[in-house]
Length: 253
Image 1 (cartoon, rainbow, N blue to C red):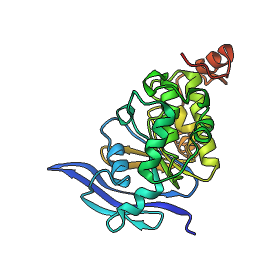
Image 2 (image 1 turned 90 degrees about the vertical axis):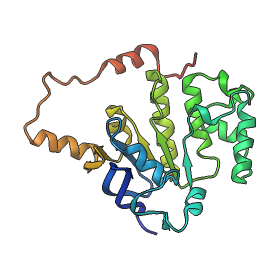
Image 3 (image 1 turned 135 degrees about the vertical axis):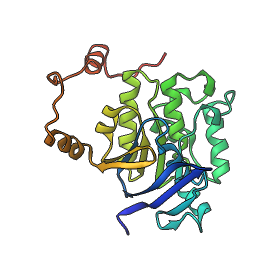
Image 4 (image 1 turned 30 degrees about the vertical axis):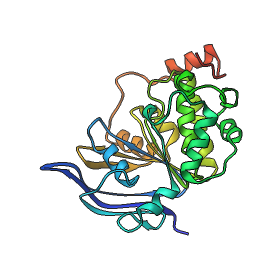
């Protein structure tokens, strides 16, 4: 079995004369958490949507667990899970009903309580989606990516807008998913999040990959240039203070 589960070669995406993705290439290793980082408009979301079979590429080659995107897009859809945004859920259905709905779409038989246990939402089984807090909605959204037992899941800025407790709780959930053998592709604007979670990151700017390595290696390379922060780095930050004072137990509004 190949160590590479996603292979992207010279991927390009044009919108008329505008080049959104300019011939990027990268591999994702099986069982890793891979981060795709970049400012708004850099091309990272377009790249993910192409791999997810949601958007057409202009040129290039993509293989997902051996399947050629040009030849077998339906086979790729069967082995990936894509995090849905709020608009993807019927707000008046409860969580159990939503799980049965998505399981039917995937033609899967699943125990809703087992799935809700995996994201610490058993007590919300009969709650409507619209009644959940922000952190609960994000955890449920991630749970739905697991319904078809995917080999790869894609998470698009999963912790945006969450408080520090909910954010760190979600970090632990993502680590648990990876520990089960699932490959995770994540986008985030939080660099501390990428540093904690990702085995490797690719930094994209203006449609090109400008760096790809482990977070530690990228930091070391910067330090080797003589870069120094303008102030002494403390052993903790304000988020650590907040968590320490308010506790690690997840509390939802």
